[in-house]
Amino acid sequence: MSVAVLIPTFRRNDGLKAALSSVLAQSILPDEIIVADNSPEASARNLVDALGKSAPCPIRHIHAPDPGVANARNAGFDATKANLVAQLDDDETAEPGWLAALIKMSEQTGAAVVFGPVRAAPGLAGNDEVHRAWAERLYARMPDLCDGIIRDPWGCGNSLVNRGVIDLPRPVFDVGTNDIGGEDDLLFAKIERLGGTFAWANEALVNEHVDPARMTRSGLFRRSFAFGQGPSQTAADQRQWSGIALWMSVGAIQLAVFGPAAMLAYALKIGAPRLRAGLLDRASQALGKLVWMNRFAPRFYGTALTEAD
Image 1 (tube, rainbow, N blue to C red):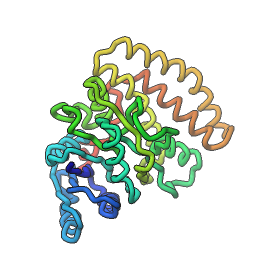
Image 2: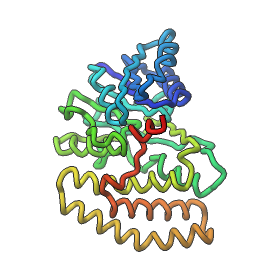
Image 3: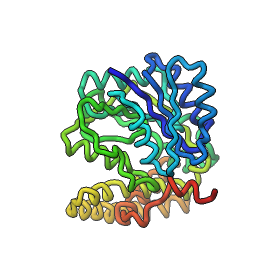
Image 4: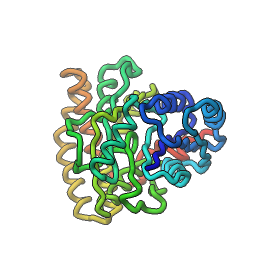
């Protein structure tokens, strides 16, 4: 069964080089690596060409010049005929057994998508202990899950899609999410409706490298707020009005509980940094569940990254 690793990227060549190097160091190499370059000027082309000359497996540079996270991922999926498509982000590096663990779990379970843990890389940028703890909550996923079938999906970064067991939508990712993200939530919701299953592979570990720009208070709030919007937005995409009402109700209750506690704990520095970070994260996500409409969604990708050009 053919295997491809897809890495979407936007003007992050240092991170991309580290990500590619980690894939080339895998115990099992993929049949090909697809780099979906979403910068209009194809900024990753020279790096990919240079690494490709001595790489032990093919590395292909695919230019997806129209800004948008969904556009980049769609271009990568369109560029490969591999049955198994593993996804790694350009701010992640994979441990040497990552790909082997994803493939093994896919074969064992027949799941449509396999996910693995994400560890916040040691030495997160910034001196604020609360911000570092908040970033770990947002960018790490280390749940207490056993190998095998799981109920709920996770994110695209560190996942493997088996195209042999599910008919993916066309395009695979909703282009309406190009600027705001959440493309993975919508895809996995569609896969679930089609009867696809999800699995977890504990040995498929990747490291998330968080840059300083995402470690500010406003940057962390925007990311938490966007995460909170996810469930309500997914329900809206499926036209599940009762689901929207449910998640908004949950958000209102959570905001009433965590909002005042977060403001008090942060302002007066009450409690350990992890406690304060948890309250800030929960309050921000609660607000996102309430104010879920796309016009209020933070823009992290696509035109938001090119407007300053």
